[in-house]
Image (cartoon, rainbow, N blue to C red; front, side, top):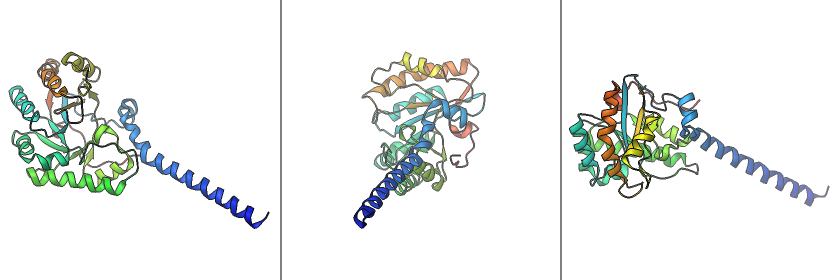
Length: 256
């Protein structure tokens, strides 16, 4: 084999190795995000699915704070005598500190949803660690409360976001029941019907208190469904409250 052919073979082998390494890196990044799927999550990672006390429902809201819609949820929850967990975006906390403080003053729990509501398809562990820590810090500085929980946007918990949660001292929690209230076709009846399949003791319910990452105006559907949801839970003998009262372990967890 000539020197030129040997160089060409080495070049092709190096290219194959580089492609394989890229594929492996992408798999390592995205495979943990398979916990977004409800079957694997609830079967293999019940704590990640937010499974808690059998007599309790954890009520959680994502994507706020939003000064236009979040106060309406706070008023509704006051009327229902219910507290909840609000997974907030750091950028919105920084922009709307007054609304954020109002959540805490009304007795609700604040948790971290990230800095912005982005999709993490490419590996970016350094940025993930920085942004999740930054979001946790702005929550603490704005309200004085130390957040315990982390839920990534879209529930996509990549390896980088696992690491970010652990570094920030946060416990990743997704959900075991959601109302698909972010959909443009959602109605109060559809939200309740969608929730019903997973609405049992120990469930963590995912809803949204804003439309900033959803269909315009969809928060009104959620707000209208809220009293019926709480009534249904209480009729079943279930207490409704935040994740802190749900019995989910609060230590950061890593994927197995």
